[in-house]
Length: 606
Image (cartoon, rainbow, N blue to C red; front, side):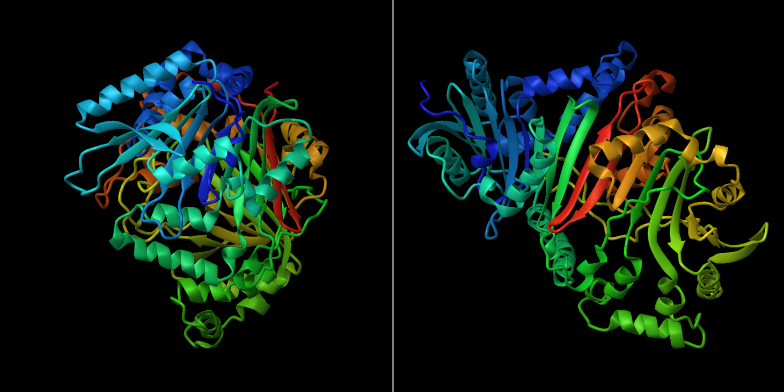
């Protein structure tokens, strides 16, 4: 079969109703560059091979839904590809369900592609599917229709197209027709014409210059969540739709797109990624919370310890955020009733049985804009090893301390403690709430569990707070807060960490001298806890931020039941074998007229 056209870029082939999009420019080049990275070398280490095979098996199981939506597995598509590969989630407002669509350049793989299509046809016939040839946009297409599912009553249908250069696969004939028409005569109405996509890719390429990324990705936040919502049981959709609508009404529809690029072994980095959050404004109502002024001073506070996992320093207009929270609170907590937030503030100020605090003027008005966030781990690694600290600059230390005392004096779950002249409000343990569940099963191509409406766990269940050295300090644990208060020797501070200095220098060279946020990671420390807990088979019991997130996503539907670890950690080698491949990493974010530009990288391990 002779093809008379050159393949347009993938974003030209997907319709403008593609709400999520991922493209690999050249699969072979991506593999080659990934293999050049230290992580790529680690993956090939014989000591890690059994674990990597187990991971691959888990990924195949999680992506089994892709084959159910496409009639072809994404793994087959990627292995067959000789050039670009792309997948998109397409969803129109009036559609019942989102549609998954995929394409792969297969030039030079005609024989292999024919064998794949023959195999798929045979497998489908074994499932009592009808396999016929039909014409779409003047091209011969395989149409596959499965028997009606007895449980759901849904009859799945797939459409596959193949020529000497490309494979197209989707479950919707209209989507395939659009893709075929674009192949023959590219016109308007594609993802490439969506303003958010255009601006995101333009901004990322502007920074990359002549460097061509290996991966491009894009999501329309609200439309993407609407697509996912359409796949979950009807009785569960209402609550999620209400939340999405509440966020829109509170002003967050200003977030029109998020996307970017990723490259491996490029520009002197192990990995370099660029992201642009497209939010052209105007910022109204609670969207004004998203105020992150740029600055050039990223000197860490003197009490930040040298030994840590991650450190981020940034600037946020906290008082403006406080003044803007009302519409969001009213729409979510108040279920759309206006004035609920104002009633809460009035109650805090006037209730004779409460703290009688003017929360704005006696507490938040004393905050500055500089915020630092630290994560660290205590050794040996256990399920409770993670330690975190949030430090918020205050303009008036005495007034902020008085406001803190006034706010917590009636809180039964906190007790007042004195430590070396410091007043600390320590959070007391309480009965753990049941693990929340997050619905992922609706994502085409990803298996998940049902959602359950349960209270979520607080960020820091055992938080301890004090004001010291010009900062409000909020620590995840009392013992970590006292360690921070005890640090006085500058030689033990992060300022003497060579990796931190190296990353900060790299950030400035990469264009982040003026930014609203900077992030630093000792990846060999950041990943240690998760690695050791997986190795011990205790990740489901973990109280780390990552552990709680995984539990929220992967928890079983039965209430109060701890999930089972799906990865066999007993196959993992000693962490010392792994950490020698993990170099320091960092990123910076810049506030711009149309949103926020983020750029990050991983440096080689020295």
